[in-house]
Amino acid sequence: SVEVTVVYQNGLPVISVSLPSRRERCQFTLKPISDSVGVFLQQLRAEDRGIDRVAIYSADGTRVASSTGIDLLLLDDFKLIINDVTYHVRPPKRDRDFYLLYCSVFLELGVQYSHQLNKEKELIGRLEELKEQLAPLEKVRSFSVCLAYMATQFGILARLTWWEYSWDIMEPVTYFITYGSAMAMYAYFVMTRQEYVYPDARDRQYLLFFHKGAKKTRFDLEKYNQLKDAIAQAELDLKRLRDPLQVHLPIQQISEKD
Image (cartoon, rainbow, N blue to C red):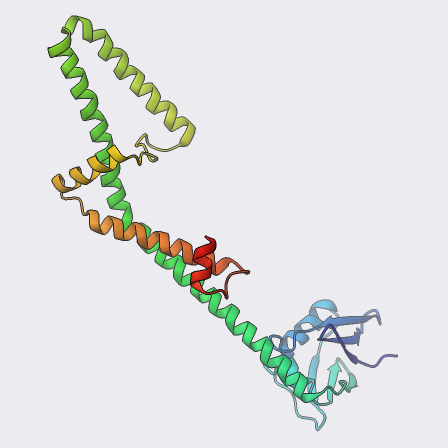
């Protein structure tokens, strides 16, 4: 048979068409809500390069626009014209209430998915903006840590040189310490591709020094903490948004699991 048939498989319409070039039947599975008549016609042309003209008309001879949804097309009989051949298509009649319910559920899921994508873009943009604001503060903090290390080392060596021992004894010691520190910093850079700024130093002594040094250098510690908290919250929201199992759970439940 060369007629065009429409059947439903797994809730989706499947249109079987006989292509003109090799006279083979081809099935096109369409999504009733998101696909349109234009999408179906493009699929026909892509499948058979021998199609010069393809269009869809309603039963009364009115041409159906490419923007018309497949769900609306399948409500009534229509004509499919491929080159010079006209096919009269009679979609199976379905329960209208069930079909409307299916469409409403599909639309709701689509709206929720679109909302998730927009929310994800918003969170990623906010995260990038916060990290950009935090970058100069992180640079100052890293400089303060390096300066503190150098000052501590200088203080220890100065005491050993002028109070505990003499320069004759400490001169080779300082040389080896300086050269050893340079080797350690270079080795750290080679292995991590990061500057040697103690990124994991978070013990109590460091925090005490950091808070004291922030006051002396007028480092905006409050803004720094606010940006760090905002970045952590944005990353948590982004993680929750991308989790398909927790996307609809209340925030309290997610917080308990995290």
